[in-house]
Image 1: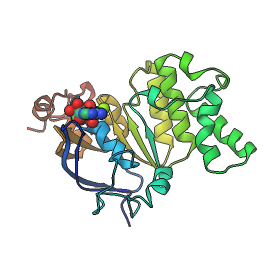
Image 2 (image 1 turned 180 degrees about the vertical axis):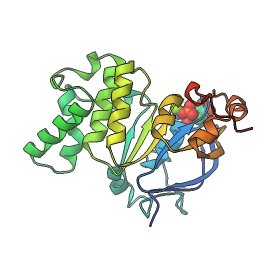
Image 3 (image 1 turned 60 degrees about the vertical axis):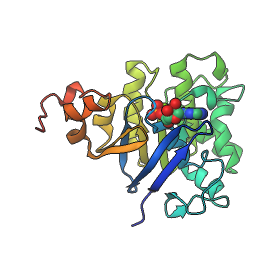
Image 4 (image 1 turned 180 degrees about the horizontal axis):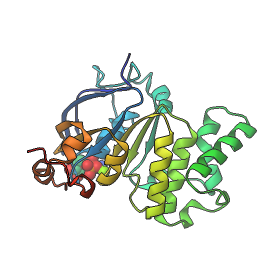
Length: 249
Ligand code: ADP
Ligand code: MG
């Protein structure tokens, strides 16, 4: 069985010279749901941007990102992008249409669905994100939590094999968060979720990767890693309250 995501010794330096990823390697199996945690600036967003080829500007000769067996390159990037739905950290980077409907419909339209199929797909995605009835609103007039839900609807409408979500619960109210967790549980896609919301990680992700300063510090079962208070504190994190009964040492 091929991996859904394979990252091989991925290094990335921003043009201003900042080393954001310093040789990251891991693989994620089809259908796995993995939490990606680490302090601000640890490289989580940079890593997710590599999964659908937004970064780097020029792909290396030896591919370091492989999605469902296809190495990322100039010729494969467009196809791979279709398989990887990326929810950006900042909703304003994702929303660009005058109405919610058009924004969510954009992906499915690109895939050549007919009008009725687009309408159905959009309706399903809006239902999953509790946005039915908001079709004609302007995304730019929504609250930040609502904007994030529109972005998620746009990603879900493309029905990607891989969901790469960058801080999906930020700005969501508790109900929005519950609903997001429930929606994600119901979707069989492979998921990688960068987040500070460790309670969500405990609930959704059987496996967690901890990043710090562009390197993987730990990769293993969520309860074991997040239950390790010393490990968490050493990397700017906190043992989630729901794991208080776990004592690894
Ligand atoms: P995280 O998502 O874990 O907070 P990022 O991937 O955003 O981390 O950032 C990793 C490192 O790269 C940080 O030191 C950050 O300051 C730097 N960085 C992020 N985006 C840029 C950029 N566009 N230009 C230069 N440096 C950046
Ligand atoms: Mg980030």
